[in-house]
Length: 82
Image 1 (cartoon, helix red, strand yellow):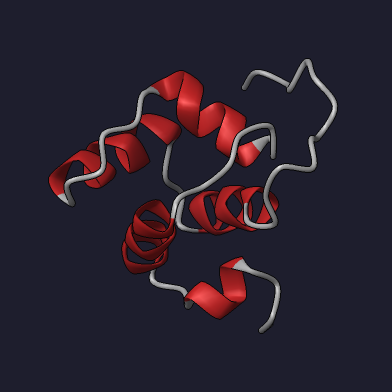
Image 2 (image 1 turned 90 degrees about the horizontal axis):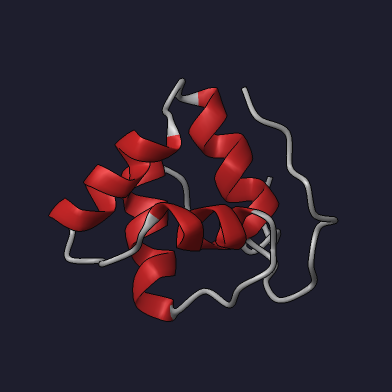
């Protein structure tokens, strides 16, 4: 497992929760990327890494797809729900 080289950013609220939910499901980034593709979201490995690292913004379409794939609510990803 590679460790993050950069500090966490401040460009989104969801990155840490996406990463936690993905890991809780035992899902690798590659698997999440494949599921995003199936759901019509075109994202590459660098984009997902930056999203999880809170370095890049997340779109509303990506947010909904991530919540659906990870089987969590959008409110959870936004930190509004435990």
